[in-house]
Amino acid sequence: MKKAFLCLIITLCLVGCQTKPTTEEILRTQTEHFLELTDTLPVMPEDLFDDAKTLEERTALAEDWAAQLQDYLSPVMTDKAIEAFVANRMPEGFNRFLGFEETIQTQDCRQISNVEKLSGGDYDVTVTYTADEQTVKLLLNFKETADGWRITSLRRR
Figure 1 (cartoon, rainbow, N blue to C red):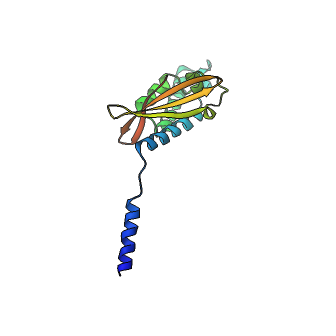
Figure 2: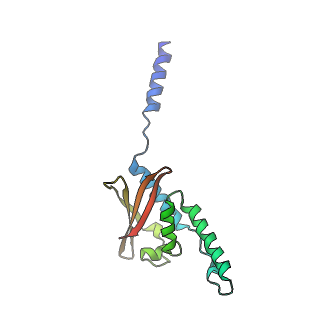
């Protein structure tokens, strides 16, 4: 009986001692997920610029594409951040936003270089891209929401 009780106590201690990920680990994981998503963003429909299409048809295409992006990025970004992302035309040329040629494979030259807690409880995560002797820093601002940590804004430094 004592052995069974001792085994139960040890098992409970081991289960209770399992560590949960730190905020920094969660943010690094969210950042990696965001970066993977930017590598495979839904492509803007080519028909969007087809003069043969009516304004209503092109508007419908644009709205459909924006909805796809919303669904695609919502696991890592807030709605407001996605709206700004789309409005600034980042999805149609994320490499251009970073200042790189479209042919550069940015996944091969990026690294999460810093996670910093800000005074208001937000965090900034810096991703450093180095390619062709050019270094660009992407700053992602994270805020904890009801759905977990989400990107609220991003900007190039």
